[in-house]
Image (cartoon, rainbow, N blue to C red; front, side, top):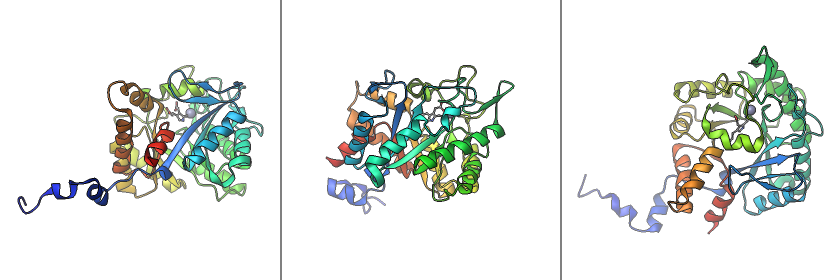
Length: 321
Ligand code: PBG
Ligand code: ZN
């Protein structure tokens, strides 16, 4: 107790503070989201996400992945915008699908230098914009699982390093694990969007990915923001089904904290498009670098092992300074 105990002793210099710091933001924990749009001829800034771009397959995309590798960011997560959509999302599992083609091109250049993660969902590929197959106007869980299995195998055949299912269907991890194992892809890990909340914070993403639902919303499959015990049950279920990493999305601190504490499992979090936009807009009023660094360090402090963020490139530069 004071005056024998004094907290300020270990705060007196940068060296002392570094010596005792409990959380570390490391470039090796970052994942950068990348949008590939089959309809584009050249890269295009996303209006709703200043500083972020969608890419056609080709030289600019490869230049981006080289930049990511040079910055020592270990992984990207790929989202595809197809030129063809139908009610069943068939372009999500075509051999020549947009993400399948992108994977092959990027792998040809970056090889082992970059982990390619494939977001697995249907909303970008269905004409109605829902994350699953419709039956009588509603998203049918078990019909959707069959399609998720097909997409997983198709991404694996193209050369993906990890699959990240984001559709919030019950049993999706098991369906994907079974499909992958059946086809000889038992080495490919699954990072499940285990606790994905229904929120306005995905709005900018939906412009970029052209994946907004044409009717209704996603609240019959994504989680209710009022719940936290349910997040634990969701994550536990995914772990039992075979997930290798569980994700918290958006990067709600209390949920990250509980998942890591209660389940002691590799935990990722996604700082989503709406969070990016909030940080970007506030740069007008406070120092962007300090604000963004603090924001991400707080996710580490809460317990996140991996952070998926649109700020990955800036963070990598700041951390190298
Ligand atoms: C697709 C998907 C979404 C995001 C990631 N995967 C959008 C949604 O559920 O509508 C959101 C990511 C972001 O906002 O940055 N299911
Ligand atoms: Zn979706």
